[in-house]
Image 1 (cartoon, chains in turn yellow, cyan):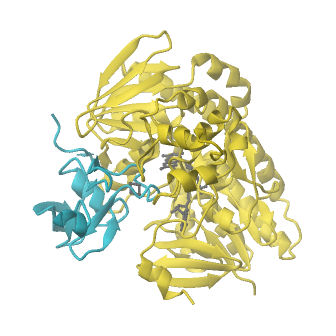
Image 2 (cartoon, each protein chain N blue to C red):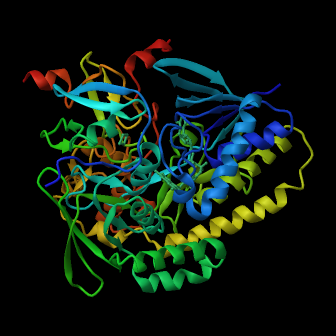
Image 3 (tube, helix red, strand yellow):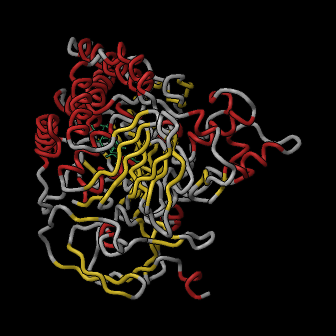
Length: 454
Length: 100
Ligand SMILES: Cc1cc2nc3c(=O)[nH]c(=O)nc-3n(C[C@H](O)[C@H](O)[C@H](O)COP(=O)(O)OP(=O)(O)OC[C@H]3O[C@@H](n4cnc5c(N)ncnc54)[C@H](O)[C@@H]3O)c2cc1C
Ligand code: FES
């Protein structure tokens, strides 16, 4: 029998495992995390007195259902938590579990690796107390902590309002919710957002909540600086009318939407295309999630769609796997396909209502740090490119400046680097090229890599 | 001003765990991440290799690697995804940087 390996036990990976199990398969499900659920349905440790029902709000029922379904699956799959997949070579996956290296062969590989926050650099963003927006939620759900006592939520994302609401509920003070996309752009995106009225209403509800709580809510802001002596003390920004404001705070949650964790897909041989709505290079698949024979991609790791789309696309990819293994097509796949298309269309609307702030990034001052791993400034990248015969493509710029070469492998600086490189050659983001993924996808102890070297 | 970064809002039932960071004892609860333990007691987890500036992690999901701390045994660990263990001896910088 063929071996089916799923990487990622979030909504997408769990839904896929469920469909495969129902047809008598016993997939391997690998996840780096301690507990299943991924980012959206992250489970607190059982010893943490956290009211998840209250925190998940309207999503509580889905959260509970997913974990119930996973609990019913664990005996019927080969579940491997706390296991990092750090490389893919042909059909071989390189794993690291509790400091030990091992490999596993996959004839069928489904990658459901999820996403991380997309970040735009600004003065002061490397100060202690600045965390990603997703990180602000992780601190709460994983550790029962707020990232600060008085938090500013900055960026462009519907999750700014969601996270600010969760922080208020848990007794945190919210200094401001500041979105760089203006209200006019949001109104223009409305027709796309009607593709998912349930989610649109939820978003409007969060907005009403924020206003009712008396939290300042600004649209169309220009971030100026995060300030403080050794840690965050205030956020300075300009509002849409051109007035400057300073908000005292001890933490900032920063997020401009999500970007797929697509490094493994890259190593596994998926091809990529630039997406002009998301302004990111995304892995290419057919409507079911097939990237190439034997390789399937699902969830936010291939196209940002949110938890509901992740779940549907995971099940859909599993039906594609079954069909490619010779099982007749399942009628259940058709409505799933429609659902994924609809939810991803909604997400395209979101990408316009909460836009990647291209002009603001391109206008950043030379001193602004671009790469937090290697401390490379935007000015250093511009200077390298301005030399005679200087590089005009991201991978060359990386080799020359070390921007994107640090331990995060360009996960954090990559999208902004792309805009800075494109701006220097007066082209669009696509022309700057794509930062290539490299093994190991995350730093591993050298001893582990050596264990299996020939 | 504030002298700790994180604010605990949900209590954790579990065994008391004592570790040290930069020579000071910190009391945490079994199940806490190293990062949560350090940031409920202070403002930083490490000093950057270039220019000493303080860092306190960023993504909290194991992606950015900006939360590495150094153990007394010389190895490094990723504070946001590593649970505390009784007796851990941790530092904000690798041994070579500390000796300078
Ligand atoms: C930090 C963060 C917080 C978020 N919080 C919310 C929220 O509160 N509410 C919400 O609706 N949405 C949230 N999201 C959006 C989230 O992307 C989707 O809601 C949903 O979780 C996507 O499901 P998924 O199955 O595609 O991926 P995920 O749920 O992200 O699951 C992916 C899984 O793959 C694993 N993985 C990735 N790479 C590897 C590897 N190399 N080796 C082993 N395992 C690997 C990860 O550990 C993870 O468990 C958040 C996103 C982020 C990045
Ligand atoms: S804070 Fe990003 S890896 Fe730990």
